[in-house]
Image (cartoon, rainbow, N blue to C red; front, side, top):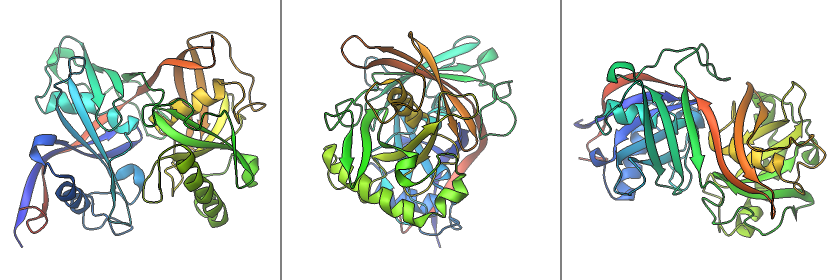
Length: 360
């Protein structure tokens, strides 16, 4: 069987990993592109045995990069969430963890020239229009991957990558509160529907009979909870103006509980049909914003910090993530920017092959 080779880099970005391509090296029409990405990842089998996916939603993600023609941005980052067991590709969301690898990958691909010991890359997330400034260590003009920065969910340490997210409110739906309400009642569950970097339906864990401290394995085994959650998510998607979301990974879903390990609040984040093993970078910004906003489902779950900017620590199944939030409360909650520290590592480079019958 003849095959088509596609140049690629394979990186861990934050707590996710996947192939990074030049957009120009892939089909331009989305229908053919989806078939190529499904073949590359091996979607349609729980182990992704016929592709390079890892059998989990955090390992079936794809980044496609190009030089940006927008005045502000240096690099355009087009993201694809490929399903693990279904032959589906979702281009609606973006991914902040995979974005951690965009700056290093762009430099490695020759799409951006490093400058000095620290290189700043302005990234436009094509899917949502979000703007992100990434700072990457590049001593001697070479991307540095070794370092002392540690993030929960990844073993060992690596060079730090700072991400500053700009204009994140309403990035997908056009509104900070897409339903116009701080809370909504759906199927007897009180939720906050919020859009900051990622649209999320947020509930209290106890509303579903959960503690909020369950492990990923415990939650994934709770089919009754997932059925109830999905019913709420589908109705919330319509209320948020997102239409029929049954085949879309957005809006995501999350539950909150009081912190128990020194953080600001405990959170469990869903992708949405599996529990995230840690916490999504985009999702963390939305949940931190919810925690800081009076009148949301977070009321009574934490003592809200005062002042701005402020660091909100979210406890997740593998540890915690810190989100630095710059915001205003003059006339309701208004987020200015959110910053996070991530790491990335190049794992492989070369050619990735798909059957020529998929794309010749």
